[in-house]
Length: 499
Ligand code: SAH
Image: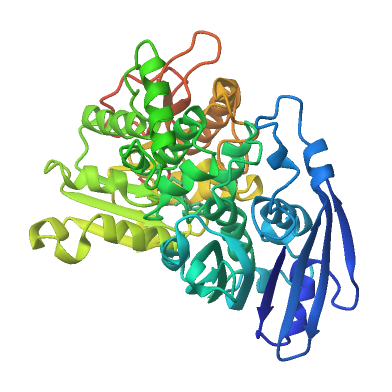
C-alpha cells in the first residue's frame, strides 16, 4: 500500500516541516496491523515527495481486532489488504501525520495555513464505483482528478477491469485539508466491510470533515459509506452535521445507498421493518435555535437586526423572509462562509427590494468596526464558543461597548447536556474553544451585562432536561432603552455615558 504526496512550493523541502518528518530519514511507525514507513523518494528545493508505505501483516490485522469484531472468516486471512490502499492507509495517515492533519506546524505556521501546490498519487486504490466516483468525491473539493481503472490482468485485457483505480490528485490546497480529504475519502472509496466501526467514528468523521463535508454534494454517500452503513451512526452524524448550521438532513432522504447491492438493500429494508415503530424524526437543534431566536426578536419588536458570525446565512435568510425586518445584516470573519451564504441566499438573483434590506460583510468581531452599529438587535448565535478565551474580552468590548445595540441575543452550547449525545467524545465541534455549563454561561453573561449597562435573562432552547438543562442556552441582553421583555432584576441599569 503506497501513497505519495509531492509539492513544488518552494523551498519544497519545507514539506518535511509541515509533516514533522525529516526528509533525510526513513522512519517507521508500528501499527496494530503491521508497519508504516515514511520516506522521501525525492527532496529537492524545487520538488519534494513524501511516501507513506504500509507493510500489512494479515495475521496481526486479525489479532488486533476486538472479540466482538464481526466477520470472522477465512477472508480475514486471505485478502488484498497488503496490496491495496484503503482504510488502513487512512488510519496510518491519521496516526503518522496527526499534527499536520490538525493543521499545526510551530516552525512554519503560516505555511501550514497556506494552500500549496500538491500532487497525490495512489497507484492501487480499491474503488467501488470506479473512476467516476473518484471524480465525484474529489473534484468538488478543488482537486483535479485523474482516475484510471486498473485492468484485472494486463496480459488479458478481455478479463476486464479490477476494482482498483490508479488515482492522481492535483490541486492547490492546505496540506491539512488534503490529509483530511484522504483520511475520510479513502475508506469511502473502498467501502469495504472489513474494518471495525467504533462508536467514535462519528466524531472522527465530523472532525476530519470540518468545513468541507457539510457543503459536499455527495455528503450523504460519504457519511453512509464512512460509517459502514450503520444506520444509528449515520443518523447521529446527520444530526451533528445539521447542528453545524446546515440542511444536511436532506442527505438522509435517499434512504438506500446509491449503489447498494440488492442484498444490502434487502438488509436495510429488513432492519427498518424490524424496528417496531419508526420514531418521528425530531427537529434538528439548529432549527429549534433559529426559531427561538426569531421568536425572541418578534417579542422584542425590533425591525433591524445584525447577525454576528452569520456562517452560511440561515438566520439572515429567515429574517429576510419576514418583511417586518426592514434592515438585516450578516457578518462573518470567514470569506468562505460568506460565499456559501451568498449562494444559499441566491444573492445574484435577489429582487432589488429585498436586496436593499440586506448588508453582508466580512469582519472580525474582535476589532472595533463602525459597520456593526446602528441595529436595534444583534445576534451571536453559536459564536462566542469559537473565540479564544483571551480574545473574548475584545468581542465583549466591540459588541456590548462599541456597537451597543438595544438587544443582544447570545446562544451557546450547554456542555452539561453533552452526555446525551451518544457518540460524542469531545466538544461538539472541532473549532469550539470551550463550552460552558449553565452556571458558567450565567456568570459570564451577568458580568458582561453589568459592566456594559445591560440586563439579561436566560431561556432554554431544545429539550429542557430537569438535571442537565437544555442543549442550547440563550441569554437575552437589553440595554433598557426600549425593554419589552421583563428582564431579571439585576439592580439598576447603568447609564451609558455616551447616550
Ligand atoms: N451563527 C451561525 C454560525 C455559527 S458557527 C449559526 O448559528 O448557524 C460560528 C461562526 O462564527 C463561523 O461562521 C465563524 O466563521 C464565525 N466566527 C468565529 N469567530 C469569529 C470572529 N472573531 N469574528 C467574526 N466571526 C467569527
